Length: 153
Image (cartoon, rainbow, N blue to C red):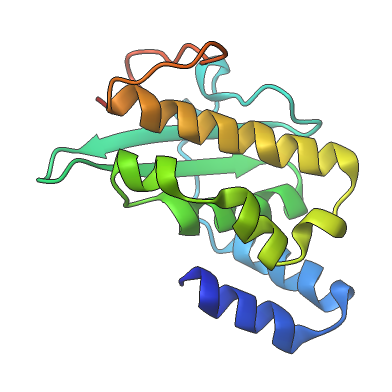
């Protein structure tokens, strides 16, 4: 599903209670994250809930990154599903160029989630962008260390 299609669905649903239910349903449709991936190295810091994100690369050409994720909170798991729709299966450069904050705002999530959930969402975004930056050899001062199993390069 693309962002435009997701935005249309959100708009069609109308009430935010329905949108939350849909977000939860998106999270339920995520493939299960293998138990071995529920580890310290994949845990996302800055989230109130337990959140795990892992990445694998496919050499291509072009190199693409594929993400998996899980959370112990239903709405957060739905947010992971949205992030994976935006980023998984794309090149590192496409991921770095994606305006995830703009997509988040387009869906109306920026004004309908608690501050803690919003902060957690952006911690997940930072993690994904850091993995993409590592794959293209870029660094940032606040780049999180990703262990060798996760390293997409």
